[in-house]
Length: 525
Image: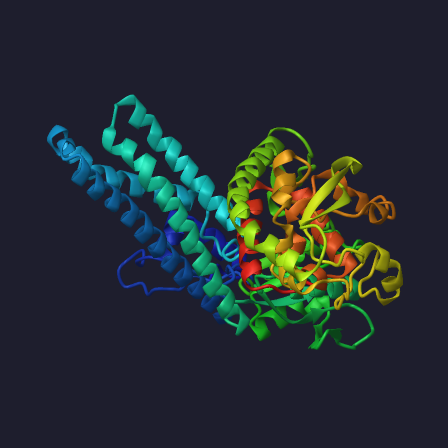
């Protein structure tokens, strides 16, 4: 082939039209046999490993089922609205029967397109909670706006009724459907299904930190197979009752990932002495892993604050600095007023039997008033149903030696000052119901960090003082994540995460989860 001119001549010949006919098509002349084209070593693109192909098929199957669920909900909402409209106003069919019957199809098509456009079914967001719900809400809002324009322009009565009835009802049904899917997905992940088989890469200390954070994640999306660490210590990493083996060094990571069927690699630290390591690693993992995840040193920065901005080939990660005033906070205040007003109606009814029980159980007032520290360090009077004996403050000094918690927050699992009815109220968080009045007057918010006592707040350092950047809340991440079972560090970390990353959708999710915690209480005493 080429009379000793080598492979380069063959490749050059194959690139020409004649060469293409010779190497890849029919022979150039009759009677000339077919000669297969030579292949350059290393030029073949990587193919997915069997483990990766299996995961991709599994993910496609879940997304297909979720798409079917979304389509069924939307179709039912739109068709039910059309049937109800035709039954209530049969004159619409006389005006334009074709348009009335075509309206549900148009709504379904636009709605499904926006859900797909907002990538609400990506595996990276399924089961994540607030992020998934936010994308569904944003997609529905865009569909609402897109359909409202022709409705107003052409005076479309059938579409107007779809916007007023089908879209709100369908959105609620979609969110409930996603919540049920999330519950199913978490139940399967608890038994080891639908999880990402993961290898951690980096220094031992940072790998241990990432491992601890993954263990505390509520979505259970990662199953750690082991770690790739470059040090001389072969000892495995131990976290609680789990032992994570050291599988290999960084140099042989791709071979280990393929051999063990890993589909995710989390890079806990990038070697400072090797700036090209990340690029080289991503190329080595082609075909073996579906995901290369980078651990960010920006602790507790949520996804919505991070965006990717490529500028002329320069990959830039943009981190939005949190703000603590402006229009978004006006929306939060409006939400507080609406939720607190509605809640106080129910509280007024529930308060009657609670007040009677408190009076019969022990002498003293029904309400307990206490000074707490609010936003920007301003103090206010917080209201609670009384759960302790009237001399509780006088007994506090004698009980401080039995302090169960760490840090300045006083906690005592078996507090003798708590009354019998007080124990029940605390367990189910009913003692905090009067705080909706504080939320209505503006001293507190429905969702926010835990309100500290004045002597507790005076011991805060510069970082912990950030808890006072927002109004304290009746509930928050601390309440749905363990309450009194949390350590001081975990309580601070959750409050700071909320302050820097809060959103209206996140608040609504916390309110919903708080209602579940009240029914099935954990960590309250």
